[in-house]
Image 1: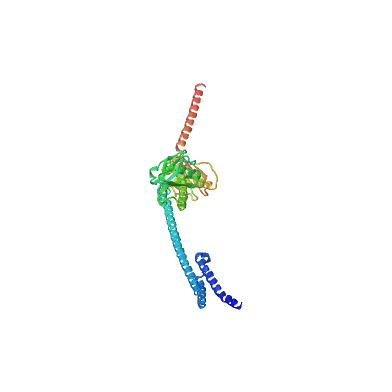
Image 2: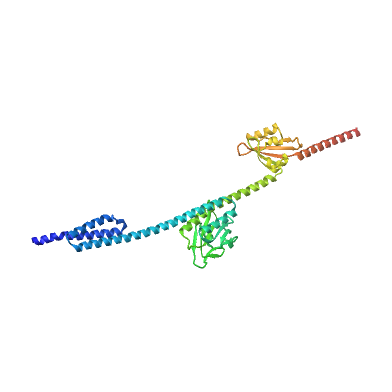
Length: 406
């Protein structure tokens, strides 16, 4: 029994060594295979080398060989795993670098577009630039800008086109059109259709393309039209492409809204100036110091000066010289008072003018209406003279009658 016990006791270190070698090898394998379980390999290697040295001292060579093979296998597995990670990391780095380059290029392109759009407020130039830049940004064969002729978008008109879609310039789409452009406008969202090699996507006005992406042009809750690109050269439209299309459409919508607002203001200004200058009465807007801020052609004719020379001159001195009555009329208007019209005769040409002044909403400014009533006063004088002559005639006739019939 004692011999068997001694033999068992002698075999226990060998079993412990074997177990340590196997467990250590498994730890190294798992550490090499699972990244989240990695431990410092030099520590494991040192431990295993210690086991090998102990086994060698005990002269159990097969266990030493098993430990060496285990460590060697673990090392090569770790090396292969490291190389694969390195390749994956390099691929991800290249992918991120490519995405970063594209983002930077997109940002520079959008900045360039913003500079171009800020240079002009004219609608024709804006839509032309948007069409060309959108086609270039998204590597599309063609691009168009479509605007609605009315608020209901019942009639759509292609106002700009580039690339293969340039023949569409001026095309009109009615309500019955079922193209992708009208769907995007009606649904107020980006619409994408990826076709096949042959043109099967109905874009607008029965024009088919291989693929297309359309973004509505909306600003302040109003849909003005749409921006469409067709037949991307690099393959199907990606998420990044749609993001860029949406960004271009958003910027273009703001600029187009400003352009339309500018056009409305310009037309209103022209209509107002036309009516302002068509009046036969002179009109002047006079500032706080009595200088003319705005005047029409009729006033320039009455003052006998060029229209461009009216602005900035003193209203009273320009027409009447030192006139206390005209000055009091203007001062009363400054105070918000409405006085009776004032009739003044010009010394230099004996014209008779009637002045009416009223305060403006703008603080410290008044508007003065100047009417030339010279002819009216002459006619009134003639009427008075005629009445006097008629009265004298009646008097003479009456006296003669009395003399003839005492």
